[in-house]
Image 1 (spheres, helix red, strand yellow):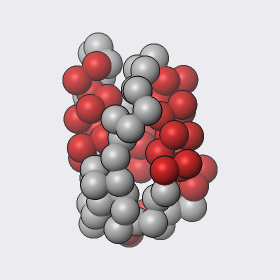
Image 2 (cartoon, one colour):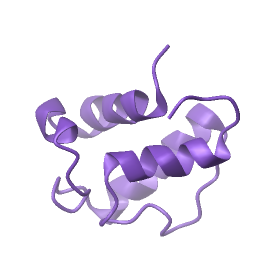
Image 3 (cartoon, one colour):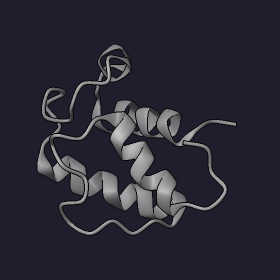
Length: 81
Protein backbone atom coordinates (compact mmCIF):
# COMPACT_ATOMS: atom_id res chain seq x y z
CA UNK A 1 0.00 0.00 0.00
CA UNK A 2 1.44 3.35 -0.95
CA UNK A 3 1.11 6.40 1.21
CA UNK A 4 -0.28 9.75 0.14
CA UNK A 5 3.25 11.15 0.04
CA UNK A 6 4.42 8.29 -2.20
CA UNK A 7 1.49 8.75 -4.56
CA UNK A 8 1.93 12.54 -4.69
CA UNK A 9 5.61 12.04 -5.51
CA UNK A 10 4.63 9.60 -8.24
CA UNK A 11 2.14 12.09 -9.72
CA UNK A 12 4.66 14.94 -9.60
CA UNK A 13 7.28 12.79 -11.28
CA UNK A 14 5.13 11.05 -13.89
CA UNK A 15 2.80 13.89 -14.81
CA UNK A 16 4.98 16.95 -14.26
CA UNK A 17 8.52 15.65 -14.73
CA UNK A 18 9.88 16.50 -11.29
CA UNK A 19 12.94 14.28 -10.69
CA UNK A 20 12.45 11.74 -7.91
CA UNK A 21 15.75 12.72 -6.26
CA UNK A 22 14.54 16.32 -5.94
CA UNK A 23 11.23 15.17 -4.49
CA UNK A 24 13.06 13.00 -1.95
CA UNK A 25 14.99 16.07 -0.74
CA UNK A 26 11.62 17.52 0.34
CA UNK A 27 12.26 21.06 -0.84
CA UNK A 28 9.42 23.50 -1.26
CA UNK A 29 7.37 23.45 -4.44
CA UNK A 30 8.96 26.79 -5.26
CA UNK A 31 12.44 25.26 -4.93
CA UNK A 32 11.30 22.42 -7.20
CA UNK A 33 10.16 24.98 -9.83
CA UNK A 34 6.54 23.90 -9.43
CA UNK A 35 4.47 26.87 -10.57
CA UNK A 36 0.92 27.84 -9.64
CA UNK A 37 -0.55 26.12 -12.71
CA UNK A 38 1.02 22.80 -11.69
CA UNK A 39 -0.34 23.27 -8.16
CA UNK A 40 -3.84 23.79 -9.57
CA UNK A 41 -3.48 20.68 -11.73
CA UNK A 42 -2.15 18.74 -8.75
CA UNK A 43 -5.17 19.83 -6.70
CA UNK A 44 -7.43 18.43 -9.45
CA UNK A 45 -5.53 15.14 -9.37
CA UNK A 46 -5.88 15.06 -5.57
CA UNK A 47 -9.64 15.49 -5.93
CA UNK A 48 -9.81 12.65 -8.45
CA UNK A 49 -7.49 10.34 -6.45
CA UNK A 50 -8.78 10.89 -2.90
CA UNK A 51 -11.98 12.91 -3.26
CA UNK A 52 -10.37 15.79 -1.36
CA UNK A 53 -11.37 19.21 -2.63
CA UNK A 54 -8.69 21.84 -2.06
CA UNK A 55 -9.58 25.49 -2.49
CA UNK A 56 -7.43 27.57 -4.79
CA UNK A 57 -4.31 28.63 -2.92
CA UNK A 58 -4.37 25.85 -0.32
CA UNK A 59 -1.38 24.26 -2.00
CA UNK A 60 1.22 26.99 -1.80
CA UNK A 61 4.67 27.36 -3.37
CA UNK A 62 6.12 27.37 0.15
CA UNK A 63 4.68 23.92 0.90
CA UNK A 64 6.76 20.77 0.74
CA UNK A 65 5.67 17.33 -0.36
CA UNK A 66 5.26 16.46 3.33
CA UNK A 67 3.00 19.50 3.81
CA UNK A 68 0.84 18.52 0.84
CA UNK A 69 0.58 14.92 2.06
CA UNK A 70 -0.42 16.09 5.53
CA UNK A 71 -3.06 18.42 4.07
CA UNK A 72 -4.58 15.62 1.99
CA UNK A 73 -4.27 13.11 4.83
CA UNK A 74 -6.10 15.41 7.22
CA UNK A 75 -9.09 15.39 4.88
CA UNK A 76 -8.98 11.89 3.42
CA UNK A 77 -10.42 9.13 5.54
CA UNK A 78 -8.43 6.00 6.26
CA UNK A 79 -5.42 6.81 4.07
CA UNK A 80 -1.85 6.77 5.35
CA UNK A 81 0.07 10.02 4.90
